[in-house]
Length: 199
Image 1: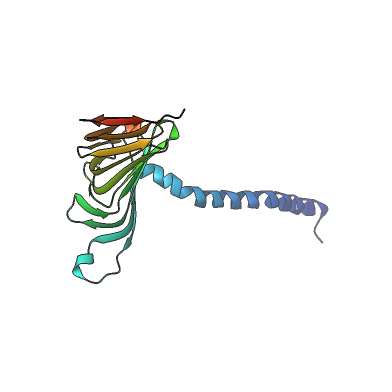
Image 2: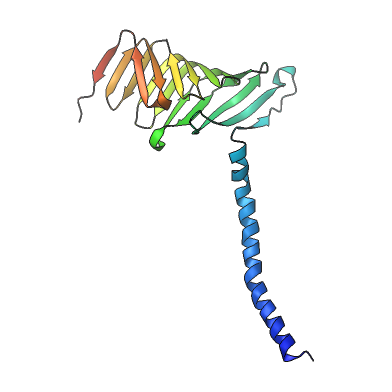
């Protein structure tokens, strides 16, 4: 028969194991959950995609449901998605229905999308055409036929006719520029502004 001292030691060991094993399991679970976030901090730009299932030559080098995440010059995140992406060379990707999303100062956001576009990876420029639309979370939208977006700097410019509407009313212009990640919108050329008569 074990002595009273040995029984007391075993009882103490069991009590400590009951406390330590759940803590160890919780620590391992936290590591599994938080590891992707930790890895993202050291590799902020990532690309995810699905390989096209087509077997013809035109489908080679193409991606469907492309998703790119990056960090701009000020450390704020941006994302770029497209229904299809085809890489034509080391720097250029042809996009179908691209959309870019940027976070502005104070947590507000701006999004730009179109039916077609080109992404230049080296300079992180998005060249959009065909029904280009820019949205801000304050209700402002800008529509044009062509725009060049610098995802890294958070700027955009277009020299084609522009139609904009928002809380202020409606505006027609000959071009536009966006600076400071959508905080500032400037309209160029001959313009027509109709102010909203509401409060």
